[in-house]
Length: 247
Image 1 (cartoon, rainbow, N blue to C red):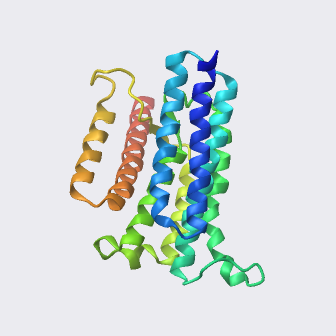
Image 2 (cartoon, one colour):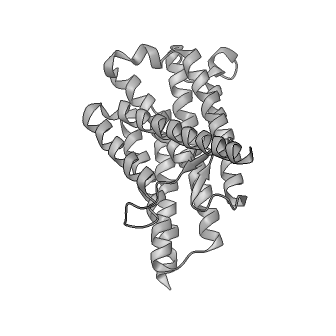
Image 3 (cartoon, rainbow, N blue to C red):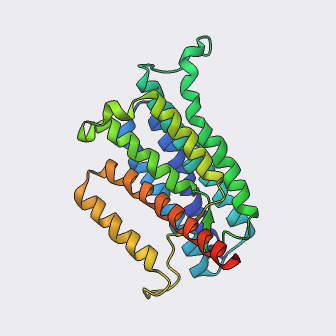
């Protein structure tokens, strides 16, 4: 009977690393954030895989997964944006007696909309093989890329990333995409053949190319941007086809 607890233990590892990522952000140990987010992403991928392999899927596991994701891929990206916005204004910490230091809370818009998205996901029967709206791990990877670009001043882009108007825009756009009615493909392969997985194979090829050409932080954000764009293009293409058939 021990095997039924294995996937949930992996899910809790995801949650723990999300908490450690938050501690790293708020104690200014930013270099540890990618490490903890990376473990959270791996745990999030393998908990479901283990549950299927061990044949111990359960409603509790599904709920536990969403609760863990809310921290690792809901609160953490909001905290990263909060940190970046404060950095753009030269603010260290927050003072609830000084409202000007609280502007970074705009970053937590992503956290609020991630909560809505995860609640919808558990109730939406359409999202069994794909997603409707941007999934929270992808959102987190994109923001992590921005954080790494700013920290390393990659390609001299630090001043561009640490522009408060840009960061406000990112917070708003990501919040919209999290709940948008835009179909986005899943990263999970349906089979081991190329048939039915052409988009995923192409995406993996693009991912490898990005890591070969660009620094890690730039590659992360670029990969997710490509993922969003290709999903929108496929969605719009499907809409055009349906309109043609209607006429």
